[in-house]
Image (cartoon, rainbow, N blue to C red):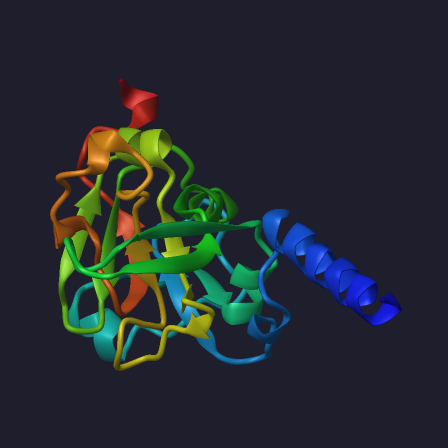
Length: 191
């Protein structure tokens, strides 16, 4: 009986910790920069060099804020259960809120352009971010998003939780994200 009780208490404790919004412990690993936020109001001391895909896609890195997995893991995480692709199987995605990442970079309440490794770019308006709180997912169904798959980062919306997003296409669901830049769309601060 004690073994069952201890197992139940351990499961309850694990559930409680997950519900508090913390990332899984195995995400907190040292490693290279996986996300660069260009035009940051709060740039890193040593921004990434302007080379490779940054140069190819014209993403300025001089005033950029660089994030490692550890940096992203230090932010409060959220889980979203939704379908991807649209109409596909339900998955549980985990990661920090896009708004929190932008706030850390000094780009709160701004429209942004998310750029993927393949050059796909999705511009997201500030009011859409504020209303629906998408996440930059690092995990799906408990597994890290792999580079070359959907990772290292994917923008995930609560399409399965909010009726207003029920018909949302996958156009604003970029995956393989490595950079975010200020966008051209009207910002919440300008409205």
